[in-house]
Image (cartoon, rainbow, N blue to C red):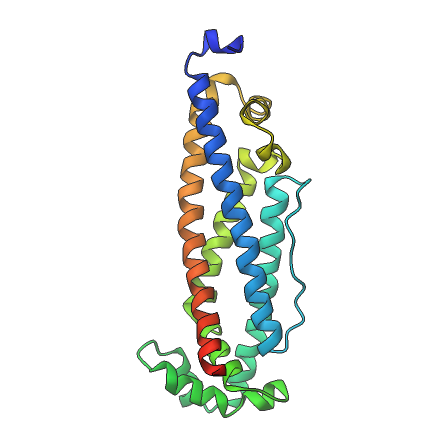
Length: 225
């Protein structure tokens, strides 16, 4: 038993909790890198983007890795904004408004985009039109991505942000010492509660993000049949 455990008998239990929370956070981060690269691949293939893939920085901090994903998402949003502006410029106002109408059928929206997407991209397929409909001006960009960016920024700015990613795989005591290096022992319980809150928000935002990307990829597969 560590010397501090005599003063703080709950510490062994908290070590286990810290380890669990950090492993879950690392899993969520890894999933977000994978999902973002999946989306980048779709945009590069079907909308003519040239976005670079991203890689987890294993020797970096949580904040550094959150920032990598945030920057990639901002780049994705910029590319989608360009397509949106081009659609607005090429389509008649009534047709463009239909793209923004959540009541309008998706097949109708794809048909509308198909009229001008080749002019925008030089050449295009029905898959490109489907990607544009799914992502441009949709809840994916206006809501889901923005929410995930906000959560990642909050995590990066929290106490978690300064902890190295590599530490997360080095065992409970190493993680615990990293935490204790940043907070007073008496603050550990409050810190764990804060981590739990961030993790709940991260999981929720991440799940919606992954679901949205899966919808996009499934639509593309359907269009390419």
